[in-house]
Amino acid sequence: MVTFLSGGTGTPKLLDGAGGSFSPDETTVIANTGDDVELGGLLVSPDVDTLLFQGGGILDREDWWGIKGDTTRTHSALGDIGEAMGIDAEPTFLPEDKQTEGRDIAEWRRFSGAAEFMEIGDRDRAVHITRTSLLDQGHSLSEVTARLAEGFGLTLDLLPMSDDPVASLLHTPDGVMHFQEFWVGHGGEPEVESVEFRGSSKAEPAPGVLDALSDDVVIGPSNPVTSIGPMLAVPGFGDALWTTNVVAVSPFIEGEAFSGPVAQLMEAVGADPSSAGLETAYPFADALVVDEDDDTEFDVPVVRTDISIDGPEDAARVTSAVEAALEEVR
Image (tube, rainbow, N blue to C red; front, top):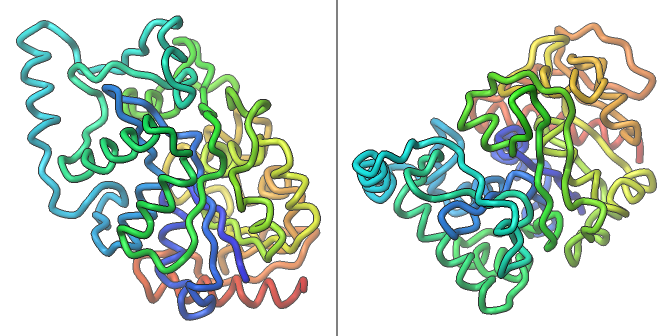
């Protein structure tokens, strides 16, 4: 049995080749929900949805989010109406007194949907409508995710990290921003002074998460701060990782990050913005998988391979290295 921690695009890319090393019916994936936002009254859960679409065979693998070939007519219409009304397509938080009104799922992550700042496809939006409707009926996020996973035909178990709201917030000179506002709305431009996972101290691991963390755990090459960090901030999550076998795959080749604002965010939390910072980000890791051209020395066992992932064949190579690393620490 193996459990993958997933956020962003790093771990999903790794999962493309995991089947050769890990049987899907013995695999659990725990998804980050710190990136979730409520946009126009709909709960968007980007990291969960990437895994749903990937497992369902409809993921847009050019962007690694959304549905391949999806249309964006509703998004375009919102922009047209907003332009006519003088509403800018920029991230706009709802007022503070509206952030938690009416539903527990929204805690400092509720945005206006007028001229929405995130492009959402039409079929993609249908998933958000379904998710939000089921939540409004009283189902938990775990229950809704399980039903969606069944509907998309996933053969592995998919769990959200928590049923409780956690928001990844970045403190910048321009004010506090949700990660999606920072990355999508502002292109990752503002300097990040600190990172906060609002709501994490009151959150609990979703049902099944702690059991899954008793199996071997693999942290893919996701962003250690905003993809994996929200999970580690949930009480009990990090403690569980100290008591099991954990292998982490580097998202760096020495000081060069594969994608996204990884280096910038690592610096913001006081970690070396390179593969050397992994021991700070993941002090519980028993072994690491790093690139064959990375000469960084570590205090834990290391398996080196070409960790670039441009397709299933590359993913299979890296998951084989993960399997070898797990064998070293079992």
